[in-house]
Image 1 (cartoon, rainbow, N blue to C red):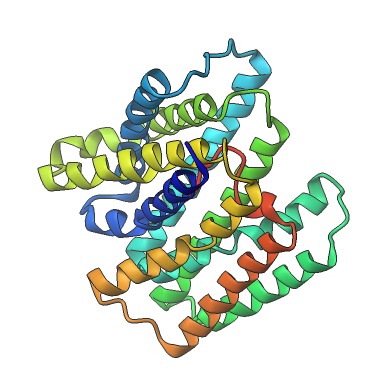
Image 2: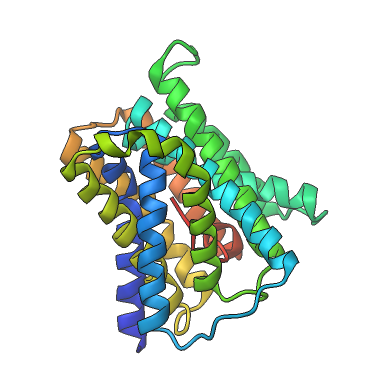
Length: 295
């Protein structure tokens, strides 16, 4: 893979990740069923990718590896469930912008957990994202579906920030594709009890959306992300993945006519600018998660 094809693969991965909210809204079933279906299809897709495309050998996992991957799977399950609840309650645009708060939340949590000094540009990131979220919030009334949906989106971002830090703690110990497969397997097992009663009611078209969600927006997107990092720098990946919310909001606008207000556009632009600025100034670890697991 040369530089141009790697960059193309990275943009395709970001595009697929950006389509996540749209497919979640199209699937006429519960968030628990959506997450179970996504994880199950992702496991199949990642297994095919690992077996046919990569030359990475499977590692023998230690008890500590399984413990970390299980914790990561639980956090990933919570992240996805809260994100799709946000999509169902408030729409794709608000859910995506709420989730996009995760770089700022990662900065705060990283400083607390790893006792690292927060740098000046990271403080700017937190401030810009916070102001952006205030602008995105239509009102501060908990009876408002948009406000509740945004809070679910921020919770999704918080859980994803914790997932990123969990993956960081075990970085390099397990191959990224193997780690992603194991975490998705944990997600599927955890959500199976909640999804099982609903399985007979899922329509054929909804299975199609779930398959696309698992194969394209998870398995293939993750595979493209990992493959591109063999050629591209993490900084480049971070900048490209800052475009993910742009793709998601644009798809929602075109497909569901979720026309954002001027205030929402201003808030979203501020959040996306903050992520882009953070990536350019060296905060790449906050924008490009270790194992490539994004919304």
